[in-house]
Length: 495
Image (cartoon, rainbow, N blue to C red; front, side, top):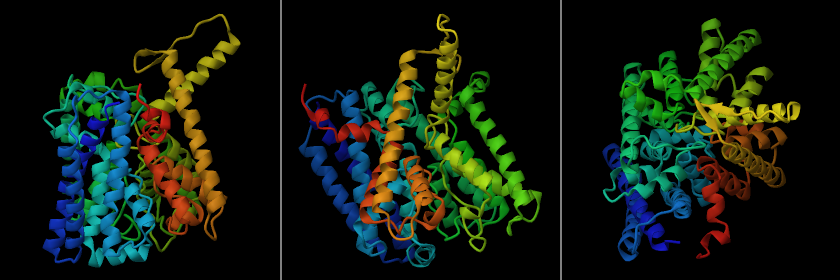
């Protein structure tokens, strides 16, 4: 185990966090808000920790293998969540540290679940825009990944950095776009920055205020969902809602395909089975929800156009795991949707975006492989002597890969069951089974919104439940293994 390389890398992450946090600090100074000194203190704390780890713990070798990659990713994400919570605590915006940790885990993991009430968000929009900016900026940082950011700009990144890249990027597999891991990280971030900038410009043109355009673009890019108004996206015009809906889908697609499009390899890109399954699910779900909403006679549905817009927005929001809402606060929340629509959206929570996107969930490719594995097993039962090969994305899928996906799904369901049981045991007053189940599913899949009482926010949960949900969000974002293995004692034993 290369302990020095692990903690040296975490030190660099601490420095990067300090640098990134200077952006909301400068914003607070420009806006004349008192939170500037709070953010500056946090910058100082992270910088001191980062410099100490970076220069006092120098690795003898920079060899990074799979085990080190998993530990680096897990500890880095825990660190940024723990330090990133300090501005909220010190400023008094979220005085309880566990609440602030939950909020920051939700931000960096791009979940969007919040313990803030609508009134608190509206109040912060008036007095603490810089803190709201930091809250949404964590989505943008976490969307592509803090380690990917380090690899993109660190000149010393070696090819072994692919172990770290694979540990942080979501999906059953992560392929190199180009031979070097550092170049892959740079390409990913250039695409990420480019799409974010285009969305910001589009929202400003559509009439959204500049500040709001930035924070909502951060939330969309990271598929996070933190808003700056109590009604999320509902109070903005239809054009802004359509723009955000389109970009939620864009950020839910595998970024490798965008690189192929840049290289004009359109035929290769459009051969992606995962892409067409993803688009197909969106079209079918949007159609079904549109019809269901049109027949439900809801107060905010004035006709077919409104039904299509709200259904497309919510479908894009749930399958991309962003979690924004277009439902007016005067009408209620997601609970007002008819049963069929809520059921379909609940299923989309599990599917999530494509592998290699910023979306959460099981991922479309993993769900597809599970279905193919089930079909193979059924054929084996019917025709035991016939060997059936499973093909996906034009390649034969090995039994090892299929077994790996099945094991991942089994572990995923076990974690979900444990989280649900904890919530039921430790629930606050007024919570029910529906709220606890959807809250567990939402946090593990990095969605944000829940049904029942929890649809209004997670502030009613007890401190232990909030900690469990916080780690469920990190487990979901890092796809289980980094967090689980980091806390396993056997991982740290020298071999």
